[in-house]
Image 1 (cartoon, one colour):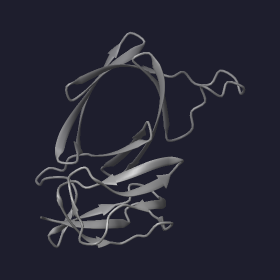
Image 2 (cartoon, rainbow, N blue to C red):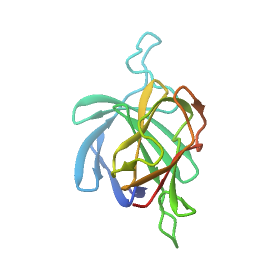
Image 3 (cartoon, rainbow, N blue to C red):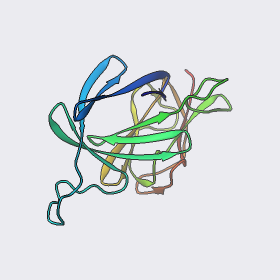
Image 4 (cartoon, rainbow, N blue to C red):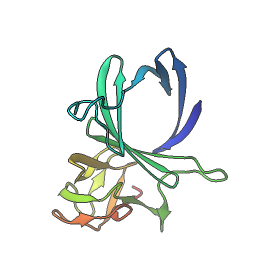
Length: 174
């Protein structure tokens, strides 16, 4: 099976092929050997228990856990406490962050608590620079600039609870 997702400004292809007891997963140019974790054999076997929204697997022989969620065309994957937002590409127009009035609107990927706001109004930022640090599902989530620009609006403050899709920061061009 092959899937295609939008990740920032890039389109990423993911190919999943059955191989013996597991799978060969190719993400872009990287290939991984992945095994599906077996379900709990008994109530006392907590290492194998998987909750809704959790994906337990082995990656190149090491046991791993990822948290996954979907909302329409968006897919959230939190792996090693690093969240990723993937979007199913939309035909007919370029997918990605929605531009509103000439700026990018950065939204909360999931409900959480704002721990740190690391920029100020009018700050120049570089692509990949962390703007806001959130906590959600016992994970630290870093919201980063999708491109270089200037912080035009900061719509949250430290300690504030936010909902999924809530605008956190708006960035304009240089």
